[in-house]
Length: 407
Ligand code: PLP
Image 1 (cartoon, rainbow, N blue to C red):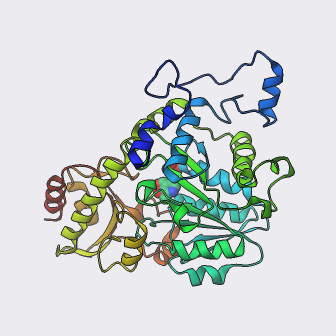
Image 2: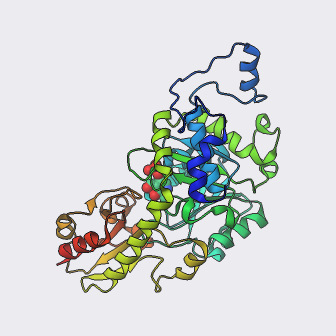
């Protein structure tokens, strides 16, 4: 089975099928019992596969994890209660005080906030312009253990030098973490740029319906964890490709407890089946809307990797199937931001992205408000900047809505 959607839709049936069920059933039991207590002990000790307690894994969550591994062409996935839980838990499990983390400076606001918290706890964090591999290389120190980038950055849509950073990490033995949320595995597989771990907020494109929070970390099998000193002795057994993700599941998910509920995993799995169909339409809408807005006299600037004047237009075309479904634009200074937003009738004033509905948000006043004016300026975020997450609505309705609000 080769096609992206064919694999997602049929993935559950690669395993033992329960009662002929076409869909993976929702298993809500928190605990799992064994007739022979020795089997329970063997599962606990990692000698036998199986389920023990829902905080670590559950059959419904496990099925979703398999599905995400298949989408990312990875070897193992761990799911969490949100995208932030996935990022936080992965870093908490793998880094120690004194370690150095290099992060793209163009970052989702909460990830930026989380990294400043880690920095205050003793993990040194350096934010660099990751559109340039030279800038990233210049920031590497002997203590650098991890490099973290997003594919297309929020909200100005910069595209990181994903391939060059991958080569750098491979050469230096640094763990390379790529947040694929903005592209989703349909547009881009970070394995192609030699990522070690992939982050996905399942809340966004993978679920698509905006009715479930979830996150995932996928091990791609390209990093040899035997060289990573922070893997505890307990997890240094078996295939060394799996040591990192095992420590994330055991030290991170089990001990920290940010588990994904099976009912939520079920909702995400249903959404995931239509990822390619939705994403195709959302990207088409984003491209058509940006081409329309670029010519509008009340718009100062449009940021979208699909436009030929975008600084990373060529890189985006080389790396991604489509340039994504997120774009942002600055209104002319004389246009009242609030009046424009309040006149939208189809587009919804809301945070979140990847929903089937088109969403608009004035980023400087909301998701990037807390980081302060100075950091916003360094990220190129102006007060008149609006981020749009293109939905699946009919294009003409979206164009008409934006036009009437601008008029
Ligand atoms: N990563 C990126 C790029 C995001 O945009 C977001 C949320 O918007 C997250 C991670 C966090 O995901 P969640 O909201 O599921 O915690």
